[in-house]
Length: 330
Ligand code: GDP
Image 1 (cartoon, rainbow, N blue to C red):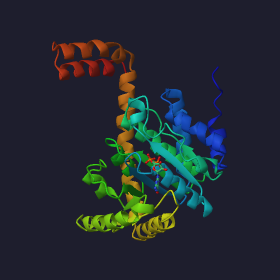
Image 2: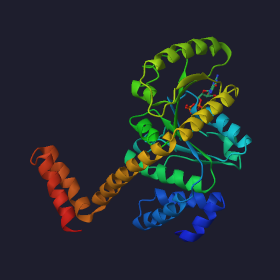
Image 3: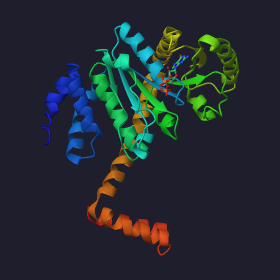
């Protein structure tokens, strides 16, 4: 039986009170592909947008096994101990493409999940990265309206997901391991260039020395990149998420970024620039979804694909035919 969806006002007031159930239900609406749900979701997000709260959005990336969930748990608990409310969102485009998602399988952030001042939400499922992006952006807004001061957005280094997460956060943190080369860690130069901090995790036990050496090497490499528009100089830090060492330093570093960029105006400027991306991606995503859900298009698509793969129709002729059918029935 279908569950009754609370009204827009009920959900909005629940979110404003910090009610996690209302928040979770609103996020479910945002993640839905049902047009009616989407319309409701949009109205709620719109209400939540005018909150004017000081919040911080932090993107965290790194290859599987680097310690992302351990690190987020340690940082999250540090933040709640400071009286902050922390939301953790994950962006995992692999979860929709393959059966087993990289981020979602194991029980993650067990301790943080029990913290009343933390809210953890796994990756939305979607066929497209654009779909995940839209849902994640809107989920950030909902979490902030529910009083979460810091939103941590975790992503695994697959495909374009880091670039996407980078386009929706204030601060971008790259977790690394000492000892393994960048090729082995699957880290592309572009990702290092996006980072506001490089944090070498697992700096404990026998790794302490190699972590210190890696810190020096990466620091040298960072100097070769051009100065960031934010005026911020990224640095290399080391930590042990497992032993909870160096986490305070990472947070203090992020706070310095916040102070600098709010005082030089970059923070606001960047968020407005991100709104432009949001607008354009939203349009892309909505129109694409609408197109493929169109009855004529959905009906004709399999045979058109067949014609193209058989070589009887060219891709652009086939595409135009579908687009024509789509437009005719608007
Ligand atoms: P993720 O795949 O990036 O989320 O990585 P996890 O947080 O699941 O950690 C992968 C493995 O590394 C687990 O066995 C963790 O216990 C371990 N690990 C995480 N952080 C540290 C650390 O700071 N030091 C050490 N020695 N092990 C760690």
